[in-house]
Amino acid sequence: MEALVSDYEKTDMGTIQIAPEVIEIIAGLATVEVEGVAGMSGGISSGIAELLGRKNLSKGVKVEVGQREAAIDVSIIVEYGKRITDIASEVQHGVKRSIETMTGLNVVEVNVHVHDVLFKPAEKIEEEDAQLRVR
Image (tube, rainbow, N blue to C red; front, side, top):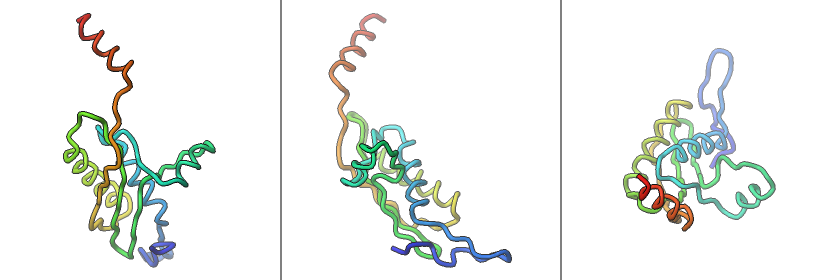
């Protein structure tokens, strides 16, 4: 992975370069917007950053960037009861669309890795059941 996208776009004013971290943030934000994604699954370093109070917007995202193309890997946690393949497909389309729209890069692949399933806490389930009985 390159430190910067080299010679991404040359204009008459100079060269535009986009750092891979920017692409990671775009991919992370696009991923968490998908209904059914409970969160991102990152490594130990992103967990430590969050404990220190820093929001890690690129948590669970890896990118490989060339001059005109990008490949993205996202690691997610899905909500229990949702169809995983539908969520993953929506993540792929959303990430691709966001990165291509914002950067002009061609996204050649978006790999979705499902690392966990989030169950609702028991008290929340009981509360929802009580609301259904009242209706």
